[in-house]
Length: 471
Image 1: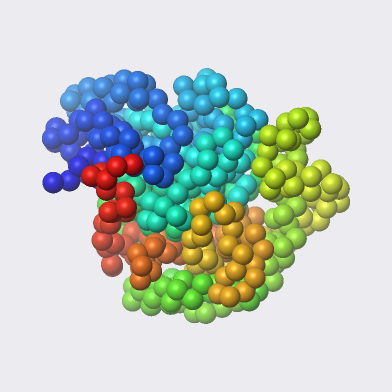
Image 2: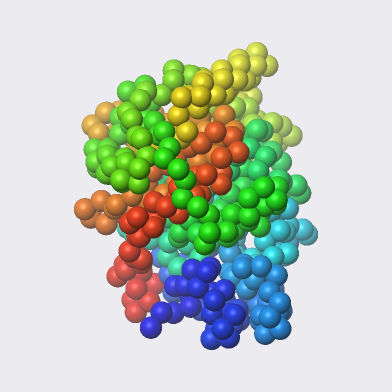
């Protein structure tokens, strides 16, 4: 018998409509699952049971009247801890941010609340969401449910660990350089980095990565991802209702497969799974051809991204004091020192590289419809370690595992992360599809078609997180 915490959004809505399950019962099941597994993975760092149950009771009354607000009415959804939610703290993984409850939701969270979603928990992040693993001085290390010795990635590590482990069917997160897509890949989930401007934002934290960071959904299927996207991207709905049951499969597409960025190493297991994904896409009738990424991608990764992220941190912490700096991790303190040392001309040059990247990607999409890449260059590494130091036997820098993602943010493009077949030892592996600006609906349609061709077997990270085992 399936427990309510195992149900996806579509199944929850059907059960609510049939009155075989209530939102109160579903929330209780999800919170029981949280109690059972969170001590092992440290995904959730704040919760508001009282407010969530009050909202669940209101949702239950709406379903009994046959008047739900949306398909998300009564669905428990967690929120990443750099997105303010009324009644819960927003610490940004930093000891510098106070623990008091926020007074209002950031606008995408408010849209979910207005649609009846139950915003029941906040999920862990690395300090200032600027690293590719999830650990901080306030809440500690988040672990991958599939192997708790390993990281789920970052910066949405808490979000993906929660959804993968059954703590809610979906999560609201952010992606400034791959922070949705890489963690989704490491935990067997679907995640969308929307086009720039697709999900309007207001009433949030100070902008760390101007023009780069977006809010997007994480879910266990593309259909559920679309259900969340319908709510948080209101400008998309008048153009395309994105009904996950009727979104048509796309016509044959031209897809460029980038297996490397300027020769950077990729784990051989990921290479193997990418070849299988390319074959599956061909089986759907699409034209997949090997191609090289333009040089502007590598230039952005090496010369622009480090400047944009370091100066962003320096800007947010402009008024901080040496006493404040001492409360940061050594890695973020070093990034802050770098950001403060950079000159206006350095930022100007980084922006020049970013504009060149956008021009180069415009040229790419004159020839093809989509780009296929791995979501990550490395398999997950030890949970307390900030990054892998080697990939496929080659030494790499702290961003070596992340070469496939930040350029998408730099160009303002949408990208959808989907699960490929897992490794022989059961670890999830993911890939991403990148489209031109505004092609979010096309990516979702292809994601749905890919899942229909080979429906993923529903796996849960057991027995390592079995409810029968002590936490």
